[in-house]
Image 1 (cartoon, rainbow, N blue to C red):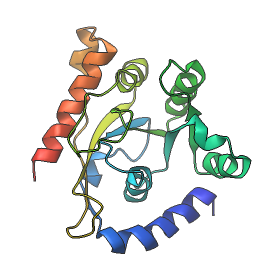
Image 2 (image 1 turned 90 degrees about the vertical axis):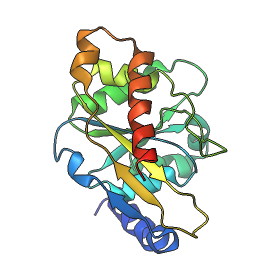
Image 3 (image 1 turned 45 degrees about the vertical axis):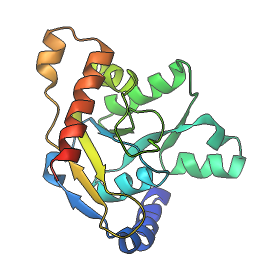
Image 4 (image 1 turned 120 degrees about the vertical axis):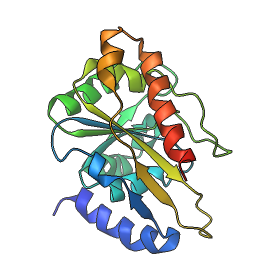
Length: 192
């Protein structure tokens, strides 16, 4: 059993009962082929929560600082997290993300780039649109609904794929594609 799968089991054992996590829309996630899962970002717990609810292995980006400690960096790589330099174009991270998709895997992104302190959606960064336009991946919006206070169940809702054909035909910019993805996440959040 891989460290990723061991981690997934441990996360489920700890976080599932604590936050009473509910999964919705798993049927929207293709069983194979490249997929980009784009979620809102409200907590440091979001990556493990999305990872434990998704039936497929997700590769996430993590801020470069997490890899400075050799032991933590080793663990991060074992659970399919790769580093990204924040605040600048990181060509290595972009190449790595495209390689993950080219190999038919799942890339998990938080287009907002940082956690929302209020829980309200912020404008997404163009990176999500970049990956969507540069790959043939299915783009799945995901909304984490609720909070981590434990009073109400936390819902992880996956929506139908974002319609990419029209965006590609219209030669939409990376930012316009990200805006379309964020609009779908907003719909999922508001469809409570």
